[in-house]
Image 1 (tube, rainbow, N blue to C red):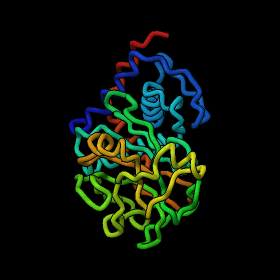
Image 2 (image 1 turned 135 degrees about the vertical axis):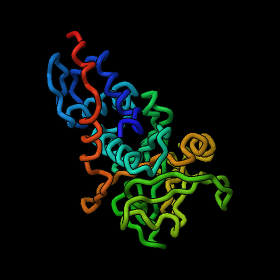
Image 3 (image 1 turned 45 degrees about the vertical axis):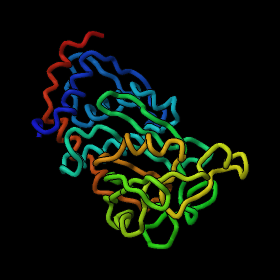
Image 4 (image 1 turned 180 degrees about the horizontal axis):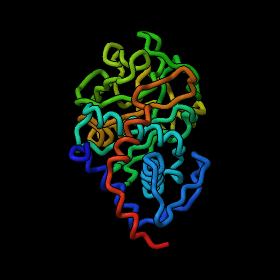
Length: 263
């Protein structure tokens, strides 16, 4: 496991040179690193996620910690299950609990702990107007689907250059290909649309983005990267949110580097 996922082990070693003692707004908890503490796998994973969150300045960009934590958990499990390649380090997070007036798509380079893009994204017309309140995986519902996706290759379609998405969560987004749920550009994703009607226009269920940014977004996330779409739906579940995988990975990581941390 360590052989194939050195990217997480390297993240653990990062803490040997970093002091983490801060309260996460989304997680509402204090994580402290102290010398000579035997870290549990959960504490190591929490510190890993906290470090990514802080270094990429995601709180300042409006991404809630708990949403990011879920996204990283799924990303890690998808890697552990060899669904995405080892060198895939880009994670896209979409939070449909937020108004479409807000820039609710974040693209993060986890390896370099850097926020690459933060922009608008539209939800399906069947999910609501300004707010997305209902979701499904049904064909012709025009609703957005929650969960984890893996991006595939671009193609040219009726919306111009678009990106295939494969839904990973059975019953929640696994019909994405059949429903033609893809990432594409749309003119109704713009400040002008917000100024005109108070919120973005809506799609037929696709995560639509600004046509000015669609090529840049596709170039950044194409080719087997992870996308997570979050929303207010208590029925949503995913095997990729099982924390046992990430905790097991952290349990197998060599944490002796913590012994040299000075506080």
